Image 1 (cartoon, rainbow, N blue to C red):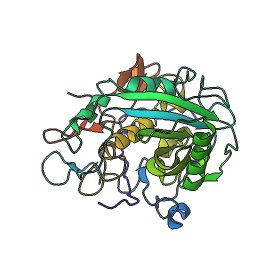
Image 2 (tube, rainbow, N blue to C red):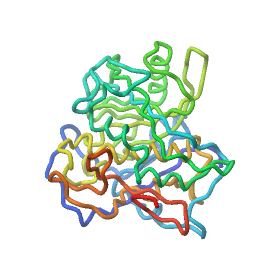
Image 3 (cartoon, rainbow, N blue to C red):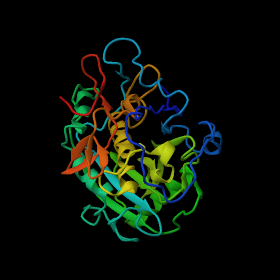
Image 4 (cartoon, rainbow, N blue to C red):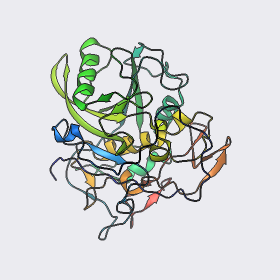
Amino acid sequence: MALRSRLVLGLAGLATLAACSESAPTATDPVAAPSFNNAADAAGDNPSKHFFEVRGAPAINAARAKPGGGTGISYHGGPVLQAATKVVAVYWAAAPIYTNGPAAGSFSTSSNSGDGSLVGHFMRNLGGSPYFNINTTYKNAAGQAIANVVNYTGYWANNTSAPSGTANVTDAQMLSMLSSGFTSGKLAYDANTLYLIFTAGAVNLGGGFGTQYCGYHTHGNVSTPAGTKVALYSAMPYDYAYPSSCTNGTASPNGDPGADNEVSVLAHEIEETTTDPMGNAWYDSRGYENADKCAWNFGTTFSSGGGVANMTIGGKAFLVQQNWVNSGTGGCRLTWP
């Protein structure tokens, strides 16, 4: 299937969970109906974005339905991140975005120890978990199962020309920023690494944040010391800025609503990049990737820290969407097997 901008439909399903009593710090919740004909896409800024749509979008049931037989998802021949999924956090803001995050201007190309945030903790401990093990049900072209490995290999707290307020940031600007990191040595380039671009407040990362989507993954050309290369990256705006469209609507299990509400979208983008990094590997007959099929679907939950959670990662409780298992007749799961 040709690379294209594919509409990713979020799913409702938190009606039984308590409403969140916490308030978000910045933007007013949008009411506009989702539309994927935003200015950036219309201009051809990046035609291969794969969106995680806002909660409560009009067609929320489409991705949940299972088309045809088999496991409900199929392989189309493209590459996967089979041996390990590597992630690098790029915190693009004038000050730390999350509590205990890396100091502004700091970076590491070989360690994540300077990132004490809850988001950093989640990335450090996602690999090897029963949850990420769901991805081992997917294989590459040689029939090798994806490994239950996620390596958080470095970070850059980039405070140079950091966007603020409701500034619109295009994909071209994100790629230029990543290029500056590669050429300056703040980032180490690796073709199999997902570069996660986090921004603060209501910064409109990609052009449709909060009204159309809560994050997305894609790829694009960057400049590196070895020349022009293709980098995998994900737009990770501050989802707590839009609580009714980009958060789960429940109280924070760790007392850190900004980070707690980011990790579910973070997991979504990591697992989709793992199984479909270039948009031509694993998806169903309608174009939905594994995490799309379980978006905003949290399964069995429990109370923790005054909030709601459904899993424990690295000793901390989180509420993270389920993922689609590619085995048997398929379905959304929190663990595998």
